Structures are given as C-alpha cells and as structure tokens.
Length: 108
Image (cartoon, rainbow, N blue to C red; front, side, top):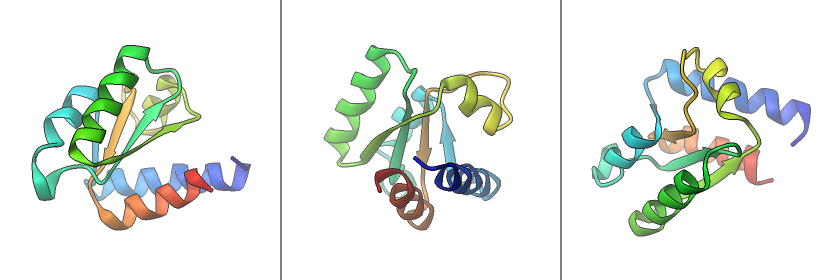
C-alpha cells in the first residue's frame, strides 16, 4: 500500500470512528455479526492478530457473508490510530459507504 493510500485509510477510519460507524474489538465485532442492519459490512483484521483470532473472524465472516480483509497494521498501530489504550485486533465498519471506500483502498 502506498503512503498516500495508507494516509487515506487512516483518515477514513478516523472519520468512521467519529461518525460512530466502527465496532472495535474481536468480541464486539463477533456479537454484532448476526444483528442484520447493525452488522458490520466490512471487517478489518490486523496482521499481528493471533492465528486463532484470524480463524475465528474468517469463519464467522464466511458464515454471515461479511467481507473480511487483513490489513498491514499491527494491533498497537490500530489502537494508537483510534485513540485507544488497548490494542484491538479487529475492526468492523457498519456503514456501507465507509466500507466500500475502505475496501477500495485496501484491495487495490
């Protein structure tokens, strides 16, 4: 990912958080998956997440037909970006618009 795309991703995640369109943390994302309209549209998984976490999220996303993408950020970087004192491994984006734009940045 280029520096420009990385900066844009950081900005989009910041906007989504301020808009209340993020679910932060593995358990919170998992609990939200079966909630229909409130379910995440896109799930981002840190590259430094444990293998168990990656498998759990991948399996649940496949079951609920939610797109999941691994991002090149550590859990510490995600925590710092979102202003958290802990290091979340998983982020769920609940807004279609934010999810589409973030996916475009990551997948390309």
